[in-house]
Amino acid sequence: MATLLVAGMTLLSACNSGGMAGFKTTDSGLHYRFDKQNSAGQQVQEGDVLVGEMTFKLDTTTLFTNVGKADRIMQAVPNTPGNLHEGLLMMHVGDQATFAIEADTLAKYLQPEQMPPTYQRGTGMKFYYEINLQDIVTKEELDEEREAFMAEAQQRQENEPQMIADYVSENGITAKPNADGLYVIVKKRGNGAKVAAGKEVAVNYTGRLLDGTMFDSSVESDAKEGDIYNPNRPYEPLVYTQGRGMLIPGWEQGVEGQPAGSQLQLIIPSALGYGPRGSGQQIPPYSPLVFDLEIVSVK
Image (cartoon, rainbow, N blue to C red):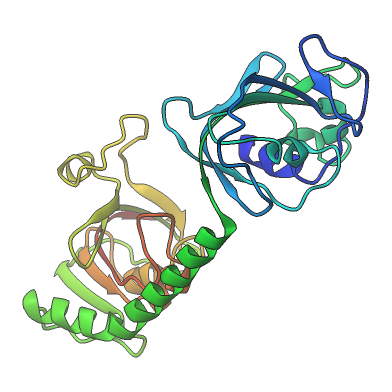
């Protein structure tokens, strides 16, 4: 929800409801306060990405913070008078500032469920952005990053067939791919009910890239071994309904018709995985995937 609100504020004008103690107010109604200014630092320009720390609040309730974990926090998109980006364009590297925008203004453009539960209409509540600007990624640098990313993705696409062939050869895999390039290696065949469309399926799984990098697992011991253990998530079988497109196509194709109790390894080409977009920072574009699966139950 916090991400939605951050994005939503970029489109909205702040209403000018008068002064706030300790804050200045622009002609368009944006409230701002600079706690530290470095006029000699690089100034934010339209299209730049701000790097630093930010805390996002509704009055005193913190909705988001990355303090202690400086990162890219937002982009100064073309300015709409009175919105947050009017303030961003005032900033220099080294500045610390707080911007305030009327909560009722945002509420006019969003559904009630998109607002924080503590929001109360007509009470003068405000959204606050506390920003410590540590660096800037310029629009030109972003364009260079984008070009490099696209070139790397194209190279990965060209290399993918050979990458899969090398993996199959190096691991002594004798199974043949289906017409879509999917490998289904049955390590143990169960004798339970078979996976079919509409069935509720419970599966334990571990997913890796071809180089062995683990990106997800429902098995606690695997997650610890792959250095992706998260104490805040449950480690238990994934339960889903087969045939509803809830998972990537290669997974659903691979388990279709397999009986409960089976242990499988799937080698999934990117066309049946996350394709040219990849998934987050863990799965690059055009990445073949390897899943070790155990079909726990089929109902």
